[in-house]
Structures are given as structure tokens and as C-alpha cells.
Amino acid sequence: MREHDVIIVGGGLAGCRAALEIIRTNPSFDVALVAKTHPIRSHSVAAQGGMAATLQNVDPEDSWKSHAFDTVKGSDYLADQDAVEILTKEAPNVVVDLEHMGVLFSRLQDGKIAQRAFGGHSHSRTCYAADKTGHAILHELVNNLRREGVQIYDEWYVMQLILEDAQAKGLVMYHLLDGEIAVVRAKAVMFATGGYGRVFNTTSNDFASTGDGLAMSAAAGVPLEDMEFVQFHPTGLYPAGVLISEAVRGEGAYLINSAGDRFMANYAPKQMELAPRDITSRAITLEIRAGGGVHPDGTAGGPCVFLDLRHLGRDHIMSRIPFCWEEAHRLAGVDAIHEPIPVRPTAHYSMGGIPVNTDGQVRSGSQGLIEGFFAAGESACVSVHGANRLGSNSLLECVVYGKKVGGAIAHYLQNHKLPEIDEQHYQQCAQQQAQSLLDQSGTMRINQLRQAFQDCMSEYCSVFRTDATMREGLEKLQQLKQQYQHIYLDDKDTCWNTELIEALELRNLIIVAEVILTSALSRPETRGAHSREDYPQRDDANFLKHTLAYYSPAGIDIAEMPVVIDQFEPKERKY
Ligand SMILES: Cc1cc2nc3c(=O)[nH]c(=O)nc-3n(C[C@H](O)[C@H](O)[C@H](O)COP(=O)(O)OP(=O)(O)OC[C@H]3O[C@@H](n4cnc5c(N)ncnc54)[C@H](O)[C@@H]3O)c2cc1C
Image 1: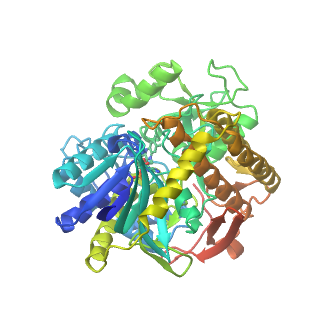
Image 2: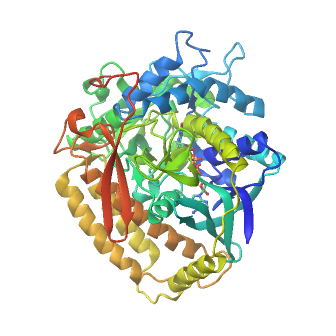
Image 3: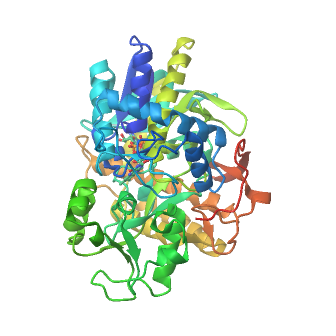
């Protein structure tokens, strides 16, 4: 059996930063990292706009406390404030640390790291590398991992978390290259498996964002926290759904409707286009509903609105946001120097996830912890984003908590031994699971079912929700779930069988979707990104608390957990 001191699932910012911290703390630790993609193809590489930190390079008045307040207000007061304090206090240190590792940030005239405005932030504090920030950071992290001798299993798909007696003991994983199934045991297991954007039909996320880590945890009996909070980014390029970064509005772009008006004046008169994402996505959706939308050719009554950069001028666009210009040009044929870009909300980010404490140790409920199991990044919920994340706080979370959790794991490893596991049992189960999918003599192709499923989630659980629509969605989802038994795979081979992986991913997506819908039904109030048309007000008296959803094939049980409020009392949110 393969064994390591620690095995980390996920080669994005969170996983890589944690691995680096563990090996830097003690180079004799045997650290392994596994990813179903090559690590530098993790979704983190696509992050564009930047990473928030109060370096005070542009705005000397800025402070961690102001960053913390903005984050908590942005979260609609659902973030855990102790976790937010760590996030915002550590931010300047982790940026400097990244720069020492070799990350090339954009600069000001005086040579200091440049910082730009971002939605919901009251100061210009987002550090960036043009509009390719994730790319700049991830490449350096992966270079550093290789230098330090972390073992990387790339293009291995993790099928199962081995969790027995409230202790994580290892993983079962499948090698895409040749179909080998390996059981790995480790003193500690960490999940940094990213988001689940592919639950929806229109998303900014990559094809690999299928919520595997969440579904594997749920299937092993771990609760999932606050899954009703799905972030829809206001400016997905129409119709592709790929992201046009908030950096574009940070650099001064306008949102306009069919009459050419900057309609944000009616929704967030102070912050305008730089209001938080939940508010801006709702504003765009309402504008389109009321007939103020446009067609890409500019005629009124269409399914999108315009993002207008024309007044910024060629030089500014090409030096600060060249990738966004390129995307609009390549995917929508729009030259943003001369024409506005058609945009509308797109599924973007998961506020909820695997519940963890501030050391990244996974919770078994509102009280207990699971031995040897850690998580960080988008798949985790330490709850710094609460009900709505502010732009540029996610890369920050990955790096701050990646580092912190890495430190906690290094400490944990000192006093723990390798667990015992029944290798044969897990190997056989996984083999059977793969084989039964290959043998299934169904009538339906995977993509047919996946499309129907994604359409269902986008229709019934999107920017706006009601009890009736979600119940209908859940019913449809149950029917679609039955059809999973009727899919068939063309590819029966063991070499690069990506179709088999897609089938496993689809099963995970369906679990995640069920948890999202059930959690959303259990919260009859509007908070952050969870917008209930039948309950339009926030209800602190009854719902200022986290949701914990326990999944089992028989159904989902909902429990709750208190919110940590130690600095900022909940107030009405105005922008
Ligand atoms: C287009 C886009 C732009 C963004 N821009 C910004 C921005 O400017 N600022 C900001 O703060 N945030 C931004 N975000 C959000 C941010 O990029 C992500 O939340 C963050 O990068 C997630 O990092 P992560 O390490 O948690 O996971 P990811 O980078 O998503 O990595 C997940 C890893 O897990 C692996 N994995 C998953 N499942 C399995 C499995 N079953 N077996 C093996 N491996 C598995 C994957 O292969 C991958 O390596 C953006 C997001 C998108 C989609």
C-alpha cells in the first residue's frame, strides 16, 4: 500500500500553499499532493482580478479592521468574525511572502505593489498581476513545491475518502493514465478540491469544478455548511458564461441597460458598479426582467446588459485588463475599446463547504472534530465569506488558510502514527464501482443527463428562489437521479478513460445539488446571495446561524451552528 505522512487533494492555491508550509516546517515529512488535473491547470490559474490585502500602498488610510468590516458586511453578517480577523490581519504578510517566492505583482510608479478598487471594499486594496493574478501565483507555488520535493500525483482522480471511527485514514484514487486503483494511507488527509460551478449550466468555472471533495465528504458522513449560498458573478460574458473580471469595473467600467442608463444608481447609489456581487447580480436580473436588457446587437429587451469600457481608452484597457479584452474579442467577437460587452450573471463561487475550525480541522458537527482530516480553500467553509464573498477575498483565503492549515498539519503529524486500513476491501469496492459503470447497459449518454441536470439547477435554484420553485427543482432532481442508472459509457478502456471520470463527477454533482437545494429550502429568509422572493427580508431573530446538512442516500438532515460575532454587530446593509 502507498503511504505518506500527509496527502493533500488539490493542486490549486490552497493545496499548494499548505503543502509548501508543511515541508518548509519540517523537510523530513513525506508530503504528497494529488490532483485530477495537472496542478497548474487547477481553476486557481484562471483567477484574474487579484487578492485583497491592506498594504496601504495606494490608500494609507486603509487598515485590517476596515478590511474585516467590509468582509463581514459583505457576508451579510454570517461570516465568523474570528476567522475574518485572521484573514485580514495576515493578508499583508502572505502577499509579501508570495512576492519573496517570486510572484510578479503589477507595480505602481514608485515600485510598490499596485492595488486596485474592488466591489464591496471601501479602499483600493486589491493586489494584482494585470488580470492574470491566479496564473502568476499558482505557477510560482508549483515551482516551489517541486524544488522542495513534494511528491505530486498529477492526473489521479480521488474516488473516495477513507473515514472510519471519526478519523480520516486515507484515500482511494484512480490513475487516469492506466486505470490503476491505489489505496493510500496517511496520518493526515487534506481536501483543497475547489468549487462546484458545474452544478449550473452557465458558470465561470472550469470543467473540473465538480464538487468532488464536498460529495466525497458528504458520502462519508461529514456535514456540509451553508451550502445554500451560491455566488452568481454579475458579469459573465454572454452567452459563454466565462468571467469578465470585476477588475474591469474596478478600473472604472459602467453597467448600462437598453436605454444607456447606469442602472446601478437605482440599486446601490453610493457604490454603483462596485457594489457587492449579490446586489449587482440581482440588479442585473431585475433589469433584464423589467425589459431593460439588451440583445448583443444592442436592440432592447434582450437577455443581458452591457459592460461599457469605452471611456477607459485603449492604453488603460490594454495595460490593466488585457485578458478581459481578449476574452470578449475571442469568444463574443466584441472589441471592447469601441463596443460594450454583453454580460449577465454566471455561477461563480461556493461560499459554503466542508466545515472547518480556524486550523482547518474538519468539524463532525457543531461541537466535535474529525481526527486527521483538514480542508482549506473554496471547498472548505471556515466561514470568512458568510452569505456573500467579496471579490479578491478568495485567493486571499486560499493563501492565508492554506498556510495556516499547513502549519496545523505539520504540528499534528508530530504526534500521530499511520492508521491501519483494509486495503483489499477498499480496492475491491472501487474496482466494482468502476466496473459496474463500464458494464451498465443503459440508453443515455452522460452529457444528455448532465445537461438536463444543469438546466434544472439553473432554472430552479438561481439568483432568485422561492419555496415552490425549489420544491419543483428537488422533485425534478430526484427523477434525474434515477436516470443515472440508464447512462452508458462508450469507452470501456483503462487508458485515459475520461468518460468514466465524467460519470463519477456527475454522481458527485448530483449529491452537491441535492444538498444545495435542501439547505436553501431550510432558510426562509433573504441573506447575501440567498435571495428568497417569498421571504425578501433578512431574519436575524431566527436565521443568524450556519446551516449544517448531513447527507445520506436516504435523505438529508439539517442542523445548525452558531455564528461567531465578536466585533461587528449586525446592521442593515446599504451601499
Ligand atoms: C474565472 C475565475 C476568476 C476568479 N478570479 C478571482 C480573483 O481575481 N480573486 C479571487 O480572490 N478569487 C477569484 N476567483 C475564485 C478563486 O480563483 C477560487 O476560489 C480559488 O482559486 C480556489 O482555489 P482552490 O485551491 O480552493 O481550488 P482550485 O484552484 O479550484 O483547485 C482544485 C484542485 O482540486 C483538484 N481536485 C478536485 N477534485 C479532485 C479529485 N476528485 N481528485 C483529485 N483532484 C481533485 C483539482 O484537480 C484541482 O487541482 C476566481 C474564480 C474563477 C472561476
